[in-house]
Image (tube, rainbow, N blue to C red; front, side):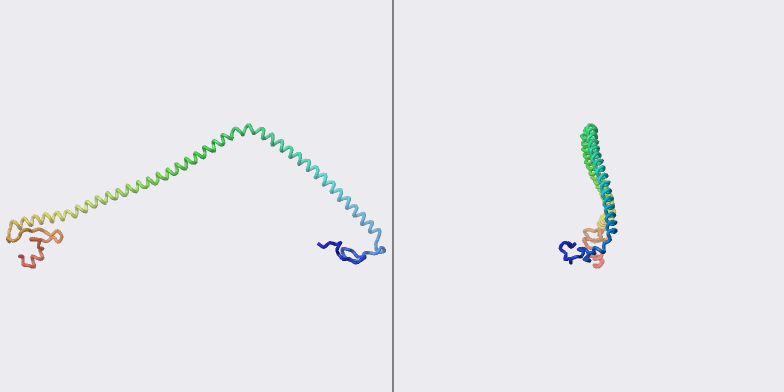
Length: 204
């Protein structure tokens, strides 16, 4: 905002609107008096409003001070009345809080132990299942071994009987032993296979 005091204004001109000042013959004294009276009435009204507002403000400040004093007094009375009632319970509250914390820690420990036992039971269950599988596999292996051993035993018995028969017949003096091949189930004479005997015509 520009300062009017430093503004260049021609003589006999208004410093605000820069218009010519009115001449004395152009001024109406009655209008000026009427305007002055109107302004004075407005000023009186403003002063009355200001005085009323000041009175209201003063009364409000006084009530605020009285309210603050009353609140402070009530607070002191409340502190005095509740001091003997609340103070003895502080230790109980602290003890209860400590017990609650201890119980929470115990619950956490039990929860961890329960989880450990759950995992241990699961591992034990898996171990039992593996042992059962191993037992079944061992039994099956024994059964398979027995099944495989039965033909071998039969072949061994046949070979022994065959050797006995050959020894009793003595078809040729050069025959020393006779048995049954456990792989081909064919006769073997003096460690010579049946195919070789047929190829040689039955004699070496």
